[in-house]
Each structure stands twice: as C-alpha cells, then as structure tokens.
Amino acid sequence: MAKTPSAGEAGKTDDGMAAAKAEIERLRAQVEEGKKELARMTAENAARVLLPEKKAVDDRRPGPAVQIAARPKDGFRRLGVHHPAEPVQHPAGTFTVAQIAVLKAEPNLSVVEV
Image (tube, rainbow, N blue to C red; front, side, top):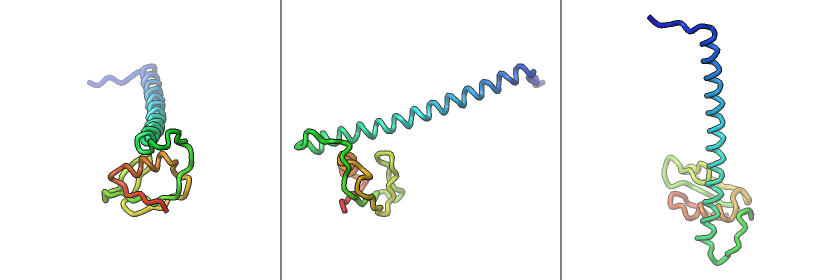
C-alpha cells in the first residue's frame, strides 16, 4: 500500500523541487554564457586563420551588410543565429568583421556582402 507523505515530508519535497528548479535555471544561464563565449572565441580564431595579413583585427569592428542563406533546406545555425535556406539581408553592423569571416568559411552557408 502506498504511503501518504506527512505534511513535513511534503514541505521537504516542495523545497527540493524549488531547489532543483533554481539549479536548472542556473545551469541554463551557464549554458547561454558558454554559447556566447564560444561564438566570441570562434570569431577570434577565424580572424587569426582567415585574415592573417591583418594581424591586429579588431573583433568588435562592425562588418558590412550581408545576405546569408543556408544550404541545408531546414536552415543552419552558426554564431548563435539560425540562418534559413531563404536569403536574409542583415544590415551593416549586425556581425563583426571577424564573425563575417567565420560565416564565409562555413560551407553550409552562402554569404554575400551587399
């Protein structure tokens, strides 16, 4: 026969659930910060590899306007942005120069400066 929890046990369960929910939210925030850091690091590395003649690339320098389309029909995710198969115009400054280098180096994307 199933045991019904006492009032004290039910309170402990509620506290445990609240603590678990708080931990999940903390971990989600950590994951989002990690994604941002990874995108930043990827852009920096691409700038070093793809733009070696400009050794002092400022990653924060705004890039030109670009049109981006994903080659996969379901779209493709890069730098924390979902790029659909249909071309999308992004105004100047949406991506930095280094981020555009990363996008251009991605074989699953078609990137054209406009």
